[in-house]
Length: 243
Image (tube, rainbow, N blue to C red; front, side, top):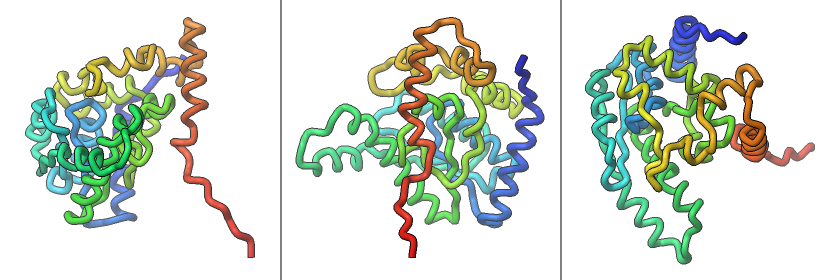
């Protein structure tokens, strides 16, 4: 039976972050987009433990009104990190109005995450930074991320950690329970991530780590989503001209 050692994983991840910055920006800051959810909270806390709070910058990026912006503010206060708030609504609306046709539902869904990533890089390059990717293994497994949006970044501390594993690490880092246990909501239709996925993260995580899932329909859906979204985890294919 699979058993996760949260202390070992947390310490190894902190060491890995330090090593990344030693090799890729000894004096640089970690720039983290802060949504108020568990992933960005845990990644920010890992960076604080690895680099110190003076080298971590949080960026809050509401798209107009954000109902749970107080959770993002709580995280910033709890960690004591420097932060910027950049409302992306005008940028998103500007792009929507500038494009000369009606965008598809999928395009409208993915536009804000891509604007947020552009914002993070603007903040990062102006503040000697490196952008943290905040995705986890569970979401990546079924493609629950936006390519060149939240799936981008310069370094990724949690891409090989499941949701359940990240929660354990979050508790070790001393984060408030309200952040670690916050139910992820897509922010668009009011549904939770699990409602949209059709299965729980607990079910998905067990299937990833142990290959066990009781519901055959859910297994089929997970397998199909994983196969369909593998391209998001791979480098862009490039033609190599042989001289």
